[in-house]
Amino acid sequence: MDSYSKDKHNPSQGDGDSCHPEEIHWPSLFAAISAISAVGIAIGLGLPLLSIILEKRGISSTLIGLNSAMAGVAAMAAAPITTKLAHDFGVARTMLWAVVLAAVSALGFYYATEFWMWFPLRVGFHGATTTLFILSEFWINAAAPPRKRGLVLGIYATVLAVGFAIGPLIFSKIGSEGILPFAVGAAAIMLAFIPIYIARGENPVLDEKPQQHFLRYVFLVPMATAAVFVFGAVEVGGLSLFPVYANRVGLPEASAAQLLTIMGIGNMVFQIPFGMISDRLKDRRPMLFLMALAGLLGALALPYLIHHWWLMAGLLLVWGGCVSGLYTVGLAHLGSRLTGSDLAAANAAFVFSYAVGTVAGPQAVGVSIDLAGNNGFAWALAGFFALYVVIFIVRTVFSRQRT
Image (cartoon, rainbow, N blue to C red; front, side, top):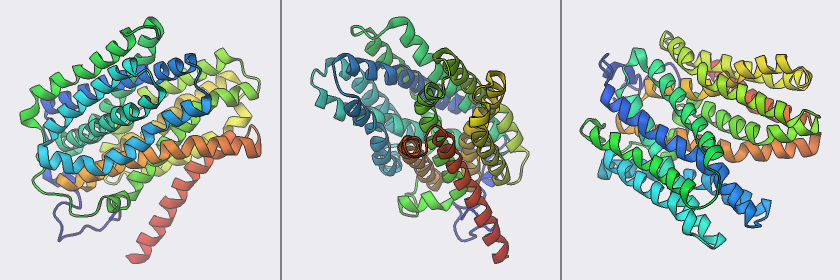
């Protein structure tokens, strides 16, 4: 379906842009963006908090990693059923229940004295937050006018990145002792309840069930789902193992942390400009290709620039923007191709693809380092970008042959 031709017999496919008015529905957008940003704060606070507490309890790194992997498993499990829940109970109501489940799970970690209890809590927490991400992004895509979709999604990505950055900052101030960090995380999630409840009358309605099986949506707009797969793999694989790579090549810990911070800044500052640029394009796929190509070249340059701090900082600033741009522009491309229940299901497939990437990325990077040495870090990341470049070229060639 991710070709230039449209299915004239399926009104929910094709260019969803033709079905939207040009005004921005600010209450809907405020509800969805603020809700997911509150969740982002909680996740940014919770991820380091949970790992440190398990470390203090003497849990092995392997088991901590296994427990953390439940996030990806929960996301992959929640994605296929989210659209059905939203169809049966409504988008806003499903989101409100997901907020409550996520908040209760976040607080439950404090009271869970046995390690095995953390596995169902992880599944509940990340399953609920996955539902919130899917339906928030569907809500935003449905409410955004076509000619400003990239701008709106750029604002969303920027605010979400700020939320993720605030979480660790809060953690650095309140620490890991007692119930306070858990209570703060649960409270941040419950804040999302307010804007969703206020704007519940404007939430998009799913009158029809998706017309195809869930997995079909993964391949329906492949340049979007492949983009978010690469984003997830590179973001999680790169961020989690960059400190290991930097340490092995002799980079001071403080310098490595500063470089990651600069990459995070790139994630934030480029999303709105990239979104606005994408709004001027009839087809966003060439832009996705160029960002993947920039990611490929940047990854290949890492081994040569790693000991030149300022060059590395400049590279990571732009590189971080391009990596996150795959998510923002990919999501905008998805919204331009589908509408209604198909868009909701495709959003679920989008998040599912991201979850698969977050599982595959760290594994591929870790194995690559073990097999190829320090440079394996850069080669693994380059491999994910190269995969996207190849997919784009192959689809472009086949599209031209069909025409």
